[in-house]
Length: 223
Image 1 (cartoon, rainbow, N blue to C red):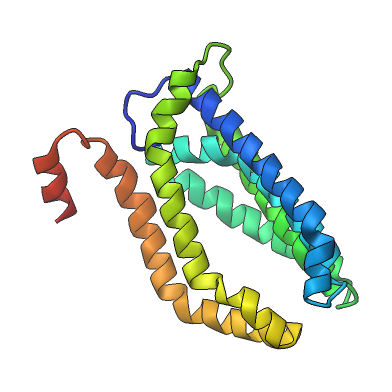
Image 2 (image 1 turned 180 degrees about the horizontal axis):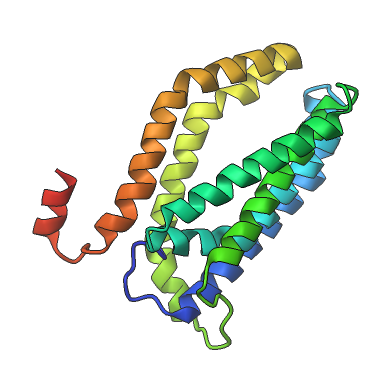
């Protein structure tokens, strides 16, 4: 919504930040406290601490999401590229170091993933020059964002479960190591389409949103 709407003001940024933080805290609580029954369902105690660590991703992402979208809106993809590359390199190195020769692989991997999200959020906040927190915001600012964002969220959630939902069932039928091999193989197979889709989505969406009030120009650009 922040990228799509061209007449956004500071109050929209504040409302988006608060909404993301509330949603992030909600999903953190759900995943953190359901970690025990989920681990019991899959009969793998190792899953509990991993899920509880990864649950913090929802909160860490919420802090940097608005800054990330504002950078995209301004087409600052070089900045985003540098942030994400550096964050990946640092978190990967930290994960390898924390693994300690393979003695705590799953814990180190989940901690590295959490560290990656934290570094990216710090980078987005650092390089975004727009002020996020404003005192004056109303219910209408939330409605402005929700009217567009709700449908997009529903579509993306559906796509997520369509592509990865099968893992929830396969994980019950086969061992965790076999599931890991299956998941990695599937991800490698879909990498070209995923990267191409991300490039088109993140590159075209903010540029097309600049003239979303001109249907003829928008159609020509899309074509």
